[in-house]
Image (cartoon, rainbow, N blue to C red; front, side, top):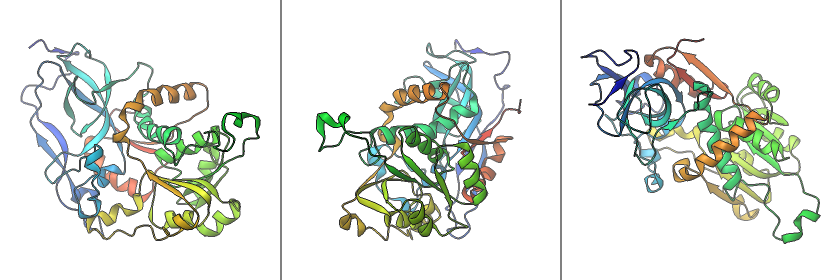
Amino acid sequence: MGVHDLNGNLPSPGAKNQGWFYACHPDAKNPQANKIFELRSCDMPEIGPGMILTKTLATCVAPHTRAFLNLPGNDVGAEAIGLTRTKIGEAVPCEFVGEVIASRSKKYAVGDRVASFSPLYLYCALKDDAPNPPAKLPSFAVTEKALVMGAGLTAHIVINNHPCAVVDQPSCSSGCFSFLGKKQQKTVLVTSAAGGVGSIAGQLYKNKGCKVIGVTSTREKADRLLEFGGFDAVIAYKEEDLEKQLGELAPEGFDVFFDNVGGAQLDAGSKHMKVGGRIVQVGCCSEIDNYADGNIRGWKEYHRMAARELLVGGFLLTHHLSKIPGALLSMLLMISRGKLKTAETVVHGGLDKWAECVDRLHTGDCFGRLVLSLEEPK
C-alpha cells in the first residue's frame, strides 16, 4: 500500500482503537461527563491514498465539548455557518495534536506532528485534501502549547476584525486626520478572564493600550491572573459584588465588553456600558447546563441596547477559518517578542481521563486552557 511506519509505532495486527462517543443526553441538574460520554473500543481505521494515520498525543478540553451536543437548548441554527452538532452515537469532535505514524500522503511524513479538529480517537485517519486539513506543527512547537493557541486564535481574530471588538479603528469624525488627535484610552471588560480565550484577550487589549477589567470565579484565580498579566484589575464574582466592583473599577463605563459567559454576567456588564458601547459574545458557558432542557436564562438587560445605542454582535470561529494562518503568524511573533503568553493546565494520563477533565473544566478548577496530555511528563 505504500505505507511507511516509524520504528514499529504502528499498532499491532488485530489491535483495537478507542474513542469517546456521545452516549446519553445530560441531566440538566447533575450533568456528569462519564454518564454523557462513553469510551468505546472500535476498529482501527484504514488509510487510502492521500491519507495519514495519527496517534493522539494530547487533546484540549473546551466548553464546545458539551456546547456542541444535539440538545433542545442549543438549536440555534449555527449549522448555517459551519457548526455541526454532535448526535447520540457519534464520536465527540475535539482539537488534538497527533503524531503521524503512517502516511500515504505526499504532504505529510511519518513523525510529523499535526493539529486537527476531528472526532476524538486514540488513532485517527485524516485526509490531506479535507476542507480543513491537518496543520503541520513546526519542530520547535510544544505540543500542549500548540493546543492553547486554538483559543488564542479566537481572541485574536475577534479583537482584530469584529466590529464590536476592535479598538484601534480611526474615528469617523476625525477621518484621515485622526492621527493628529490624542487617542482616547478604551475601557474593556472580559468575562471568563482566566480561561483559554479570556486570558489571551486581556493581553491583546492591553497591548493596544486599553484599560482592561477581567472577571473570574475566585480571588485566588483573580490574583494569579493579575500576576500573569494583561489586566488592570480582576473581579472574583463568586466572592465579590460584581456590579459594585464594575462601578468602582470603571466609573467611566465600558467601551467594549468581550463576553464569554452570558447570563448574569452579561446582564451585569450591560448595566455599565457607555453610550455607543459594543458587546461581542464569543461564548455563553453559563448556559451549557441549560442546553439539556432548553431552559435558557438569557439576556435580561437587552432593553439597554436601545437606551444606550449599544452595538451587539456574535462570533463563531468556524465561519472565519481563512483568517487563521495570519492570526497564527501574528501570535507566534508576539510570543517570540515577549508580548504574549499562553496559560494552560496540563493533565497527564490516558485517554480514559478525558471525561474527568470535562467535569473539571466546568467546575472552574483550571487556569487557562485545560489540556489532557497522553505523553509521559518530561
